[in-house]
Length: 119
Image (cartoon, rainbow, N blue to C red; front, side, top):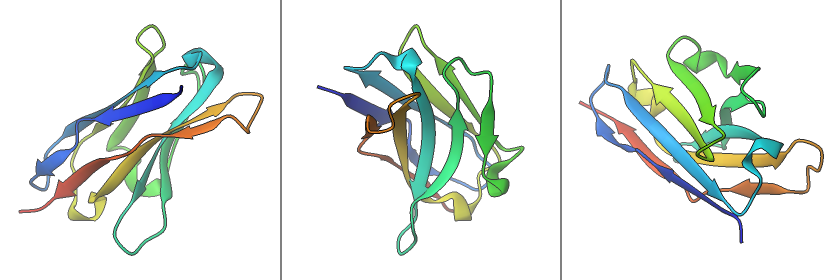
C-alpha cells in the first residue's frame, strides 16, 4: 500500500519560515519524480515545485522562486519544501505528489498539510 505522509504545516506570521516534509512508503522512492502542489480555498490546485529522481533538476512556480527550495533524501524516502519569507498568499493546503519516472499511471497523492500565513 502506497502512502505519502506530509507534515510541517502550521500557522505563521508573514516573513516566517516553515519546512514541509513528505515521507513515502510502499514505493521505490528513487524511481519517482516528486512534487509539491498547493490549493487555496476557491482556487485550483497548482504546482509549487518539482524535483527529479536524484535531485539533479528542480522547477518552481514563479511566485515562489527565490523563497522556496525543494530537496529530497532518497535514503529516507522523504521530500522537503523549505519555505522562507512566507506571504499571506502562500496560505493553502500543501500536497505531496509522486509520479513514476517511466510509468505515469503510478501517480500518488498525500492527504495534505495546511499552511496559514497571517498576522
